[in-house]
Image (tube, rainbow, N blue to C red; front, side, top):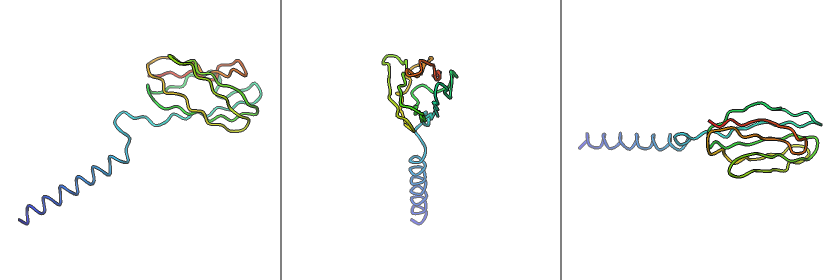
Amino acid sequence: MRRLTTIAALLLTVALAVTACGSKTPSSGAQPTKVIDVTISGSTTTPSGQTIDVAIGQRIELRVTADAPGEIHVHSSPTEQEFQYDKGSSTVEIKPIPAPGRTTVESHTLDKTLFILQAK
C-alpha cells in the first residue's frame, strides 16, 4: 500500500509540473510578436527600404514615432491594409502574413517604401 501511495504522489507531482510548464511556454510553432520600430522625421525614415524577415502567421506590431501624422499602407494579399498614425508615438498591428513571400510596407504620406516583410 505504501508503494502505491508513493507512485500516486510521484505521478501527481509529474502531472502538476507538466501542466505548469505548459502554461508558461507558447504552443508548439508559436512565434513571439515581431516588433518593428519605425521613425519618421520630415522625409527621413528608419527603416528605409530594408527587408525584414518574419515567420508565416507571426503577429507584427509597428511602433511608430513621427513628427507629423500620416498613413502607412501594407500591400498584403488578399487584403490591402491601411493605417493612420498620429504625431508622437503610435502602435499599429499588421495582420499576420499567411503565406511565403514579400510584402511591401510604405508611407503613403511620403510616397516611400519603409520596409519589405519577407515571410518564410
